[in-house]
Length: 218
Image (cartoon, rainbow, N blue to C red; front, side, top):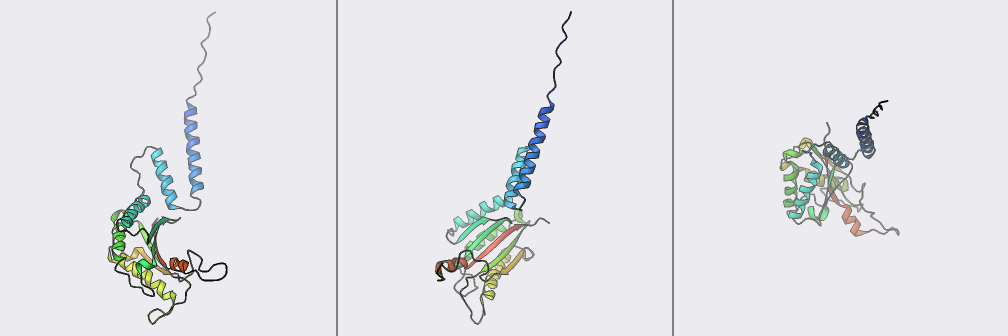
């Protein structure tokens, strides 16, 4: 009696099933990672996903911006006075108060202008047209007043406005700029030690201007 050939089991479906499970896993990992919106992390995940699907031309504007700004800071020798980082909203540029302003003044020092112009030239470029700029002025809690600025409220606001005006003068439209004066409400370091004594070096570090560069999702 002729032996019946064995039936071949088609297992091609397993490849499709495996791809589907992998995609679902990637999707849920991405959702978990961006459950609190972090645009820098989202950009990195999105670029990784696009590359995984074979898309070669992947745009990473935040990463590109940080690389260019880092080059600007290094080329002007301002590494000790300007710090660069990111938060959940985008890129953060922190300008040390002593580099940008004299004590009690809201007029930008001449030494700081080349650094600010160099960064503004990068930020106003067409590839970053989808970003907005929030300029924040911060002071320490040390009481201050003069004829021009009755308190640190006016001083912190005026300093932020001075930086915003410079950015506008270098080509960034004012509709993409926002100015806020924080006084001492958002200190980076404690102004006092455990014994209630002021810490002068911390107070100096708290006097700063911060530029938040945030993508516009509208």
